[in-house]
Length: 374
Image 1: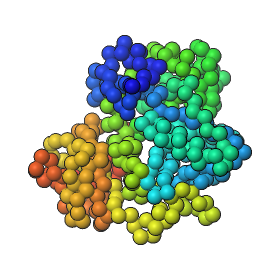
Image 2: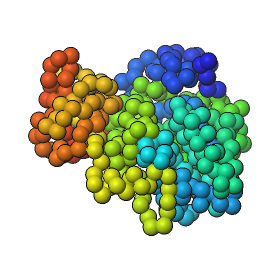
Image 3: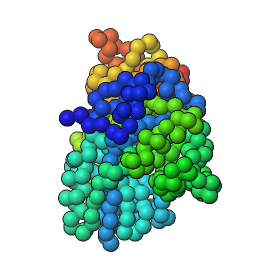
Image 4: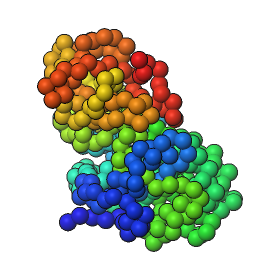
């Protein structure tokens, strides 16, 4: 049965086109995916991300548990409110999910995990937590709204009570804190994180106040944006989508996420042995960024031809910011590097179209990155 967020009726009133997304009835756009994309790049847009899962972990050994569960090291989290992006792996080194972990106290951490992997993640986390006597509680009494864009933070700050504004305004990136919404007196959990390549906040709000908070953001000039714009924005920003760019048969090294792996001494996290071998010997596959200067669109599943063998397009789209098709591709390991003419082509309906291998992100905070445009 299709699930709905608390904002479902609101989206429909705002004219959203709704689609099934991982079993959730979600807005794909509110009229123009391209306009929504540019709105986020140039000003501020808001996304309903209430389908994502908030899981609170409590117990005296919670940090020990997360040192075992995650490939990145929670030992980096020393100050309450700090956050970390990481992968959660299976024993074969495959990615069960990518997630954000927030350090709130030594006995209290918060995870935000993907919607499509909700049941799988909860079962895995709870199964692993038993040995550490850690309680994992799904916080389904919350909604979540992402407000993204160069003016997003100021628009959210304007809704907070005055005594909280300066403190929240000083939040560092990948940090979070609680604050009070001025109009409703309700506590919000505000994280300076996002999935668009722009600055902004992700706000966790109690379900009973979510519709009013969304409407307050709209009154402040924040326009709604759907999953279509979210997808083009995150791909321009070089951010993976679970299930399309990686899954439980893909290691972080094969998903260009080696930077999230910490092989620190004395920490035996799940999947470590496989990752140690791949780091020493090299992973069999690599993920690269592609730009197509010819007209057309790069799409998931298209065959990629390289001197080292065949690969495939993972995420592919038309980039509104670049005005060209861009993609992630997974290809055999080899000396394919950004800026080098590696003879890489994509099979588009039987026609071999040349593409350029580039570094990603393609776009960061509205700026096209060096080497992306020919």
